[in-house]
Amino acid sequence: MATNSTNNSLPTLWNSNYIKIWCANFMIFFSFMLLAPLLPLYLSETYQADKDTIGFVLSGYTLTALLFRPFSGFIVDSFPRKQVLLVCYFLFFALFAGYLVAGSMLMFAIVRTMHGAPFGATTVANSTVAIDVLHPDRRAEGIGYYGLSNNIATAIAPTVALCIFHVWHNYDALFALSLVCSGIGLAINSTLKMPEREQVKPQTPVSLDRFFLHKGWIEAIAQACYAFSYGVLSTYIAIYGKEELGITGGTGLFFMLLALGLIIARIAGSRPLREGKVIRNASFGVLISMFGYLLFAAVHNQIGYYGAALIIGFGNGHMFPAFQTMFVNLAPNSQRGTANATQLTSWDIGVGAGVLIGGVLAEASGYHSAFWAAWIVNVAGVAILFLFARKHFIKNKLR
Image (cartoon, rainbow, N blue to C red; front, side):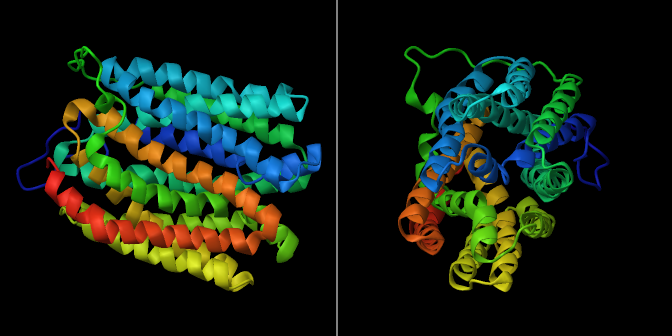
């Protein structure tokens, strides 16, 4: 755990365990984001897959992550967290090798779908351990900085992937690099020194609340709406830019600007989170993101394309750590894993629906209809937050 400093200063935030878990999380998302932006192009170029098929194949990853995350929260709360984390991380690492040996679209789809399970479990376990090693006085702030590992990985990985692809035009090189990077993250986590903690005693019968945090249901619905919008944009951004705007190498810049907005927002929002202004950060973030999705849907040129990336990133950078703090504050300490699993599950549901429905809409009536649908669903999520979720959180929070 983090150690206390002097009476006149805050407890330590960047303790050794937190730094390790931060770096390991960076490797999770770096290895993931090396592949994510180019997989639609990979399926299109290698297997001549149409938009519907691409959406179907890629949504399998999210579906299995979604199915396994609730159970992951229960397991993380019920067994030694370091051991659970290492097992999940190893499976996440090992399945990257499957992309190298998959020789058909069917085999690729199977490997990709299977990979979602350890990804979902590893992100739950890693984020829960991060909360464990933070001092309570720095927890909300630490959650915000923890997300920077995702954001920096999101900024760097697509650019690295595009450079490798343009030099060698070789997808196997990307698959191999993802395997190596995830292996480094596994090695880092193996050096964690976790204190002994009391395990949750099994309940008979095991209640549904061990898998899904009941108190977070309305927040989960709101966040699923925001994730739907992100799922549509992040999946079809490369093909849309190439086919309609003539942007052949701009996906890396898009994700870099998105990540820049996320990073700026997380740094700017860390102090308000430490001061307990969780709802303010969440409300500000979703309104900014809503405007970004509107810009992207309405302005069909490079200004709309790149400007929306920075704005959406800035909004999500305020929204996401605030929502994670809300979920954690709605749960007792014995259900931190369940709280994290519920938050990530709601995100998976939204992203998966966005990938699948976005592909159907893009195939039926073009990308613009898919992006307008993303904005409409985002507006619905904003309305849910302002009309219901804010009052619900204030009424039910435990700290």
